[in-house]
Length: 579
Figure (spheres, helix red, strand yellow):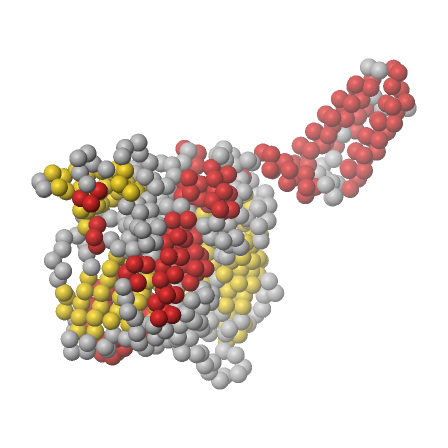
């Protein structure tokens, strides 16, 4: 007997097979429609009787086979294809939240972000949901030893509680104990399939709590990548040209978009681009100062704005796990090597205990009195080059030691060079800001904004020369290629300086976490990407690192300028490498 189309409809009525997931029902409906259409077509052709029998029997057998195994074989592949079809907004950018495999700022990363630009969020049920995600500790123990590693597996789910099948979520992990004022960072590995591995070293005795934070879901990360890479002129820079009593203000930028005549101010030595609209009847050399402001507009759709609502930022995952750690059986104190350049920047780089930062890889010292700081800096010339977060170091040292005299350079503007000296101990301490782009509402003279690579080329170096570098805060709104080019130019100058004066100490401060009030421009995902680039560019050079990223992320600091207490701990690391 040849089954009719009605018979096929009856056989594949998904309501009769409750063992299937709701998603499978959609697959069966689709198959049923195909089968019915084929059989009906054959019904209309009497001459195709033999073919009809063969095809119908084959269809029936296939359907019964699929039903009997419950889609065991097909399930994963079919569901993935359905999700790929129905959620084109899902990010195809698989940027690792802990260690991206491809080169930061590479053409591949930029291309991926550009591809994501065409994808708009329309169905939020597919967005990663922290409260639906599952956290499991691997081989949990009743007691752990100091120095051992707690391994955790995280499986992310979306708002409809479906398992995520692609990565890209930005997750931060830490262990902490509020009573002990202790905290240490964890390392998150993105497996690219919606699951994540988390490794956390246990670094103090006593109890510790596990914390996992979804900073941004993958869908928000894709939007931030798109905005960063495809809309470069989100910051407005206004340059003031002065000729006699005439002043004219024009637009300036790294990538200036204008139909007007342009002053090309690209640095000939480094190739760093900068340009301004040329004012009529004035020379390009008449540029005197500049300031900036952020464009007050949104760069995403109304639907996408919901990804950055307050309740969707820094959402904790559901985890309630406490670890008890005891000292190792071998009570011999572990001896760490002295803090010297060339040790790299392992993760975790350290941990807080009793509010003080402790290095995990070198024997750092404490500099709790002005005398200890002064003795360390005696007869040294210290250059702090970069942004305002390393200017905080200059300000702290001048204020804390009390022995410095401020040298007034008699210039207007907050970003003017800062110089202080201690005659008695022969210490010179100075700060200079980095070159364009430098975001500031304060009037800043163009001559004070110098590219760090050029500043380094003018430094002789030597055993009494110490250089601290810090960039990042002013680059989060720009394409990654802008920052990577800058850091590679600086690294080339550092390498040249160290080849000429190997005794020179160079210490790189990584960017710290920041406020996220204007999240489309300034956010910690973009900051983290800059940290990755900095690590990658300098990892082969004989420099030291101050991991300000881990030191601020582990205490949930959300300020572009960390507290004085954190600045002090950063300087304890810095001075440990100096002395």
